[in-house]
Image 1 (cartoon, rainbow, N blue to C red):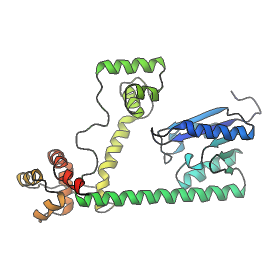
Image 2: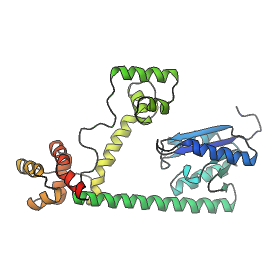
Image 3: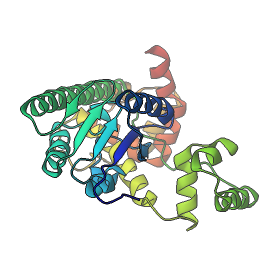
Image 4: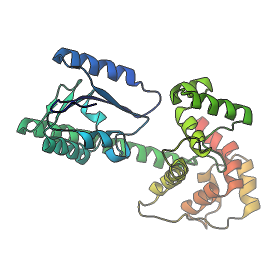
Length: 299
């Protein structure tokens, strides 16, 4: 509990995937605090959360709201706070208005209410935004190349994000969760991803929190939307047509790739051939066992 008139020292840790470890960040924050003669009063952690998410959708949001004048936030680096220029600037502006100071361990930045802090935050935020845009562009170009080669994007139609779980395993997971076993430990115990355990528990109505059903639907939408980059960014609808079914099925069984199928079916555009095979469950499944394997082997 905060005592009247005292300042709080917060450590903020964030990793964007389960493969990363918050412990290394924590050690750095602990070491920095020790150098200053401070003791961390409370740690706020976001695990498996992208820095591109709004702070209110992370544990960072509640932390910012409870900050008081004189409080200190220590993070391993400024990119842990956010990967977007405007987000970083908004967080800094919010803290400056409250009279708080942000320290970053790796960058050795002290961001408070002074012109140097504003310049540093702006410069780093701009660099982070440029880096993010470059990653997006490289990803987009890579996807465009794969689609032109005839590789279907996204997961096979009908596959599920999570592995199946039998009733006995389900009961054991619920039992251990009620005992207080952390999600990360549960994931190791049952050899699955931590987010998978979280989705299971939410789906079984054992715990509340993230709307996994909506996130899964959004993820599917993003995956299938990638093919739009092959044509034009503002295309909303798939170019699905009634291809000659027997002909296409036979060509796929003969290991023809989508570019080769398009060369034979000249009356259809490449987009029409690609989208129809992508969206048709039978074509999609069959193609992944034939032409797509050939494309990947020759890459």
